[in-house]
Image (cartoon, rainbow, N blue to C red; front, side):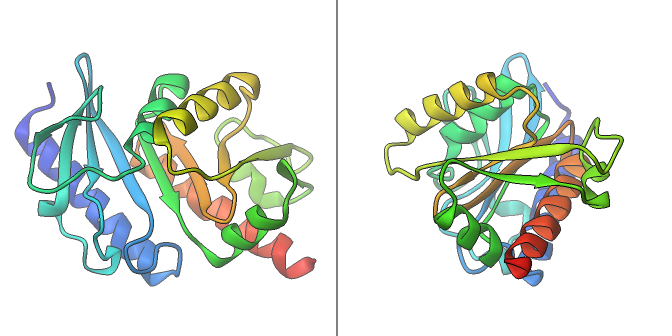
Length: 203
């Protein structure tokens, strides 16, 4: 299990991420949710509590949950979308999962059929493992649902079917992406949010 000071640092970084994303318009009000793996065995995640203003997020509002989404430490209710975070961690071996609700992510996910194709942009090289602007990234779009158990199964199936994907969109809802750690996941958010805005403005 991760030592307590390390947990505190991860909680601080998640809270800092929430405030930064709020300032950039990617997680306004109570939207968005963020998590990071505290330990792999047993699986423990630090995750934002539900219903919080991300512009005022503090380390004390970051909860610890187990691999079944049950609260282990902290005060509050884990994000309703916890099962989606757990699905990504298991399917991708991710160290952090970040979910934003930007204007462009919402608009493009609402009008796309089953995915958003991104190719030809230098910024794609900011995604893990991508070495050329000629890379073609496909962001699958999944229909949003309130049944998180069912939606988490759809997420898992999609990630198995598209092993090269660095993220996905929930229709009319926003972006999910991840990384080996919080720093990489934050970079992926920045890359995708830039590209979604470019595509949205271009069209």
